[in-house]
Structure formats: C-alpha cells, structure tokens
Image (cartoon, rainbow, N blue to C red; front, side, top):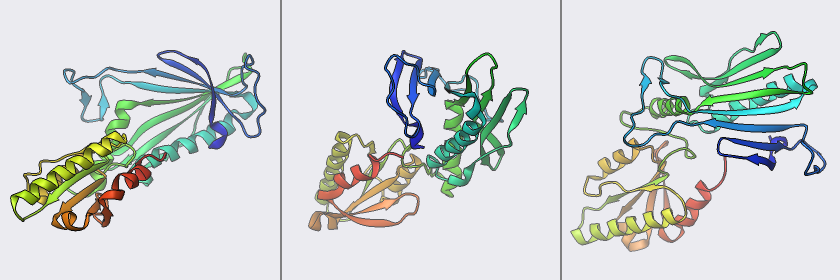
Length: 287
C-alpha cells in the first residue's frame, strides 16, 4: 500500500481534507499543479457526551444517528476498475488488522449498474452478514477523472468490533479487543497474602507504573486492589485490557512480575526497570 502514501495536504477545513496520493516513481509535483490522483476525506460526525444516549435498533445493530466517514479517490478513467479491485483488498486487509478475529471480514460480489460498480466489506457474525464499509465507483463521461468512494459508519464499526470482541473471547464477562483499539492497553493486579504493609507497597508500586505509562501516552487502568486476585483480573478482562501486570511478594524481592496476555492467558516475566520501555515498543508501533 506504499503507493498510496499521503505526501501533501492540499486543503484543510473542519469537515474536509484534500490529500495528494503518491504513485510509484512519481516525480515531484509543481505546488500549483493539481495531482492526477488525489483523495478527499469528508466527515459528518454526531456529537455524544455523558448526557446524550446512544440509541440503536437492537435487531439490526443499526444506530439511529450515524457519523459518516467518506474517502473520495479521484483517479484516471482508464485505471478506475483496477483501482477499485485493488482498493477493496486494501480496505478488507485494514479491517482484518484491527479485529481480534482476522477472518471475520470478507467482501461480497461486485454489483454493476450502468456506469457504476459497488462492493461491500462485510463482517461474518453468528447473526449473519453485516456491512461495515461500502466502496463505489462511478464513471462520468464529462470528467477526465473518475471517483471511487469509500463510506463507513463509525457507530456501526463500533458495534461490530464490540460484538466481535465479546464473541471471540469465548468467556462470559470478557471483552477481547485488538491491542490497537483497546481503550486500556495495560492494567495491574496485586497478589499478596502477606502482611498489610507488603500489599500496600505493591499497590503504590502499581500506581507508580500506571502513571509512568500515562506519561508515555499508553492508556492504562487500575482495578480495585482490595478485591481478590481473580476478581481484579476479571475486572480488567471486562474492559478489554490487553495485558495485566501481576505484582506479588516476589516483585518486592527481585523486581520481577508476571505480565499476562489477556487473549492467551500466557504470562512472561518482566523486570520493573524495563517494563515501561518494553511497553512503548509494543504499543507505539503502527498497524
């Protein structure tokens, strides 16, 4: 997908951004010249806050109010269908990259009508197919370029990814999300049956690590440390936390604690001194 890297922003306002999309071996552009291939991002966003309910039809998972995100790609006429075929592959790959179940998404059949062609990216849920994005190509004999439009509803995308997270976890009261979209990347749990002083120190250590992660722009979560260990972990799993650091009495002696992967339940040993650096390497890379 490197041939579609954004190299120049042409115009920007609140709801519309124009982008130049670079082709392979393309020479540098004259700043005054409009590129032959460029895209326009448009957004129509609903505003939500704690006092405004999010309403949807449960039978279809369709929100009553929708926030739309559109990407219009302007391309030469002779390359239109080639770009549509290639672009739907890229979009399907993108959806698979942010899902905890890569095989969840597929494309349906192309639908040809007059001078247009359409195809959908769909999620294969137990309740049936649910479109998450529509790609449409429309020819215009009067213009030198044709247009491919990608449209998605952000609320629909949220529903689908949450349903996938609940279904793929295989456990009750557990949410499995891809690490790039999980609201909380790392949480902690304290496992100490010794004297109160040790437990209190471990809680302070977990809080310190939490704040260090926040400084590195890694979203973290602190559970209720007064709960038993299994309930602390369960509280983390409910929120889709990707990793849980389990601090115990051995942590106070050797600086080592267990880091549990929420998807596999496997643990690895991590040293307190290296933890934040390793977390940055895991979560600050791009998809």
